[in-house]
Length: 318
Image 1: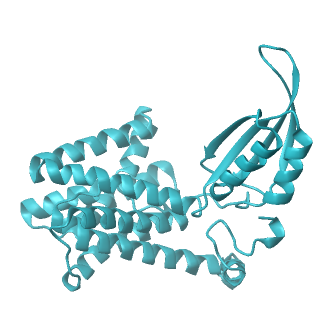
Image 2: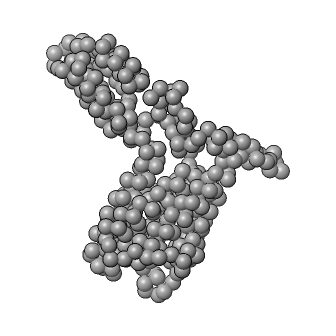
Image 3: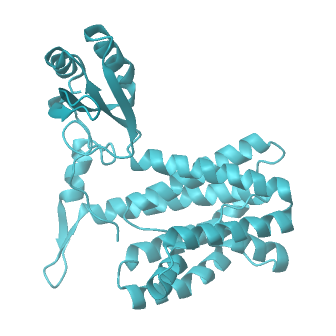
């Protein structure tokens, strides 16, 4: 698709009016700092994401002893052992780490993360009396629980916030001990799953693994705007024909590179292009029609930025 045909903001598939609202200055603080519509937009994302997470916990995960990981799992353990409310326990677990994180690592946790952590925790308790539960169908409560929880987390991430949890102690361990976050997060998740297997049984712990996989896939999908990207390298004897077909038929740009064969030493033309997932079969047909002997490498790309895809400019998370 050509750039002029794109009518939405691929950073979140937003229509133009909503993009303009996010940039509009609503009012100014006494110090003159502008407050834009993005503040309300992010607040709405945090609230909506927190609602989805609360629905997941109350309807699907907690009634079936499936832990979503992190501090929420610890709060579920405390609920079973001592009857403590899950939401308040989750907030109590998060609060000291949020304070320590802000003091040690600065304001990167900031107001948004505090708001997200508090809202998601409190909504779990506030909504619980009014929600039905789904039990007895592992496929339903595992997949839908992971889907709702992952979608809720992704919306919070889109607001440049987090819901706290084990990410904060992981950051602190990296700061003080030099332990990589990926390692400490993996270790904490393994401990939590082990506790779940011991306390709830092996089956709920295995379901928790499935739910965690679904959460990760949903977060990735929302982060990439539900549009996967592929990159392709093409070595062909007819580079002009393939290049023109890609540009005309697919509406994608092509970079022409000069390459040298490592074994033969021959100079060849290498074409590079980025396409979305739906265009991959068309690209194969284009190359096959032009040069059946072409060499093609098509690789999935986690993120494709620039013309025809998501804009390169993006605000970093707080």
